[in-house]
Each structure stands twice: as structure tokens, then as C-alpha cells.
Image (cartoon, rainbow, N blue to C red):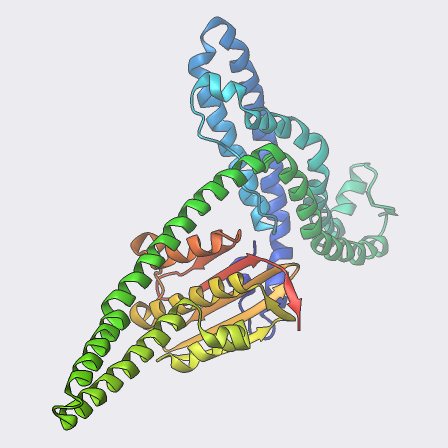
Length: 424
């Protein structure tokens, strides 16, 4: 998943600057990957050896520590993969004991990665590091060492160029510059290719993914049932304390008016006026209640216009942009609408923000909504129920919420919901 930082609109030239930083960082990341491969093979040997020692009992004490060390190495590999744009989920379960770790498929997938990584993945990191370095050698070193090398009687060549004179040494400079440029250009691509291979073993297997999927479905179904029960209780309470009480009063007033028609018509008319006023208030409360369950503007105009209506009612300066080819299903629309409503309410109450930008988009079967404010930051799901409630609301549809809110701001929140969209 892309971070909210990446997805937010950037000023002109910022994208090019990010791309250049990524290219210049590629050789450093390639070196880190190569070093990690060396460490990984050593730790994998330790894991296999301690597993063998389980037969004599000693490994029972060494094996968990060896597996823990290997998982730190693979966590570092996942982190490096994330730095080049390939997010790899941690696949580990709750197992902790030596026997459980010995039986865990993830343990041996990690070992397999450590063994195969130097064979399959190293070439990509070596090219991403070697091409720029060899180019720097041709530009900054070769022109100054060829004479000393020739005096020492050694053969001096730079690629296909046999350096025997100042002219041939200078000819190595454009070749070196070309190698630097080519290495920086293809370096990030090579590292992403290597990271995808890493993800094939260090990410969740199909079985593990299905297990996690079942756990998520059980959890989200439970949250959904609890949320629906709480919503029903709220509706029942609002009806009982609001519209129902007013309608009972209307009925009593009409009964009193009926008894007074013959005896005191003026008093009966006053009771009728009071009953009419009470019925109007009851109708308003029912409309407010229905609007809270499913806003009419959402049903009539769709998600984008419903969020624009929220923006008009907000005390903040809210800018809404939308690029949707049609409308999602009503449940998805409702979930995203109320999630944005909660975010705007939280921003108004806690963030100290003045302006908020809401951007809706739909690509590759995923509806995204970015909410960015200019407040003081520091949003933390652990400190309140609002953000956790949004997560639970979206999780029913396999949706996610990503929060980037450093102290000092700005706060960037991205909602993502996989869904189909009906063409307009």
C-alpha cells in the first residue's frame, strides 16, 4: 500500500526530486542488501545447526534464539524492500516454543530465502552497486593511475578501452559517466525486482494468507455485528426518547381536544395547535434520525456530492476533489461517507486545523480517499475510539486506513476500500 505521503499532491518538481533521491540511494541500499545476504547465510547455518542439536537436547535452548535472530535479518530485508517500493507483510504466527518454531513453515521459508538469496538475488544488488562504482572509477580514478600502472608493467584496461595514453584515459571518462547514469537509472528497477523475489519467500504463503484472511473475517464480522447492535440500540433510544415521546404527547393532546370540542372550542383549538407543533417537531426528529442512518443526499447524489455537502456544513475550509467513473455499492458509499464525516469531526475538535483537503479516486479496483489537514498532527488511534471505529467500519469490506501524523503536522490519512464501481 502506498503511504499517504506518497499519495498526497506534491508541488511541481517534487516528484522528480523524489525520483532522483531514489536513484542516488539505490547503490547504498544495494550495499546494505549485499551485507544482509552475507549475514543471512551465516544465521541460516546457525538455525540449521541448532535444529540438528535438538536431537541431543541442547538445541532446545539455542534454536529459539537462532530463529529470533534470523527473523531480525528477514525483518531488515522486508524493510529494505519497502524502501524500494515493495511492501512485504510479516507472516509469523504466535508460536514461540522450540518445537513450535521447528514445525513452523515460516522458519524454513526464512532459511530457504537466506540460502537462495546469494544465488538468485545478489546479481541485481551487485549490478545496482557495481555499475555506478565502476563508472566513478573510470571518471575520477582511471585518468590518474594509468601512467603509474604502465610504469609498473601492468596491463591497464577500462572495459573495452585499452588505456595506454592520455587520450585513451580521457576516453574512459564519457564511458564512466554513461555507466554512472545507466547504473543510477536501472538501479531502483533492479532492486525492486530483487525485492519482489524476496517477497515470494518472506511474505505470507498462500496458506498463511488464507489463515490471516479467516482471522480477519471473524474479527471484522464480530466488530460489524457489535456495531450494528449498538446502532440499533441508538436508533431505539432516539425513537423512544424523541419522536415516540412527542407522538404520545400528540395523541394525548388530540384526545383532550376531542373531549373539549363541545364544552370549550377555544381550548380545543389551542390543544390542536400544540399537537400540530409537536407533530412537526416529531417529523423533524424522524428526518434527522433517518439522515443519520443513511443521508438522503448520499442516496440521491452519490458519494462525492455527499462529501461536498459535509464540506459545506463543516466549520473548516474543506476542498473536495473526486475522480470517480461511477458509484460504488451503497454499503461502501455509506462506510466511506461516515468515515470522512468522523475524520472531519475529529479534525474540527482536536487538530486545530483551518483547511482540509479531501481527494477521492478509483484505480485498479480500489476506492481511495485521502484526507489531509494543516493542523498540529499527533493523531493516534490508541488515544481515542474514532480512528479505531473507522478501521472497524472499513475492515468489513477489506478496507484499510493509513495514518501519517507527525507532531507539528500535517496529518495525512488514506482510506482504501477494494470495490467495484457501477459506470455512470
